[in-house]
Structures are given as C-alpha cells and as structure tokens.
Length: 162
Image 1: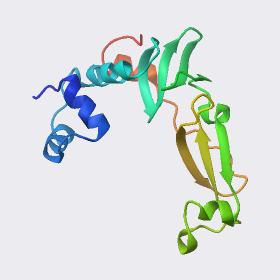
Image 2 (image 1 turned 90 degrees about the vertical axis):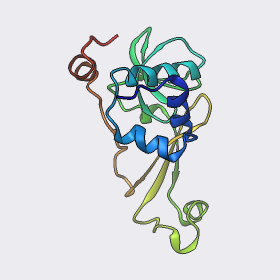
Image 3 (image 1 turned 180 degrees about the vertical axis):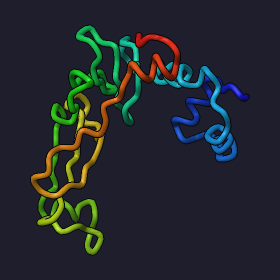
C-alpha cells in the first residue's frame, strides 16, 4: 500500500498531480494516514489556528472553534454552527431574470427565468463564490448535507472527534 506525503496530497488538491499518479491515488487502497495528511495540508493553507475537522466544500471547513464546531471559510469568516445551513449566513446573489442569467449562460444556453433561478452564495468576509444552486423560484435554500462527525471519527477513523 502506497502512502502519500503532504506534497503529493497538495498537488492533488491543486490539480497539478500528473494524471497517472492521480489515477493510481484514486483507485488504489487508501493508507491509514491519508485523511490526516489531507487535513494537515488544508490546515497549512489557512491563516487561522482553529483545527479543521472536515472540509465540506472548496474554501469551507468544519472547525473546532471557541463556540463549538462551526463552518469557516478560508479567509476566517465563521458561518455558525455546522448543523445549521451555512448558506443562510452567506451573501446571496439571485439571478432571476433573463438578462442576469444570460451573463452566465448566453443565448440558447440560458434557462427560462420563469422556471429557474441561479443562486450564488458568497462569503461575506472575502466575497469568494462558495456555491451555486439552480432551483425553481421560491424553492427553499438547499442544505447540502449534515455530516455525522462522530461516526466519521469513531467508526471510520477509530478515535474520538477532536
């Protein structure tokens, strides 16, 4: 079983790992330290000291904060308790007319604004685009997933949640 160092995992995250190595890493057995190495690389890339427990998207993490487990952006902005939908604390731009939708999907590629809107969720701290939803007008904001941190750490990793 191959074990990968922080350099290889960093290259994988950045998309600069050559395809043969990426394919081998994805399809091979995972070493017992892979998750910890991944968290180590992510932790080195953020400017704040709170411990990353789980990445939940590009630029977003569940961290062990002073107020408990919270969702945090790369820039340090905290969205609140991880069990609540972080998107409700984000800045939201809704593209709900033909003109604004066609800025992204011009002409025949655009959806019909009476049937669908695009919601762009941005970090209030750094204005990084964190996620986009396409939904019918009036549809509730989607809560993507609620990870079971206890099961991940205790059942899969064999240790308590930090």
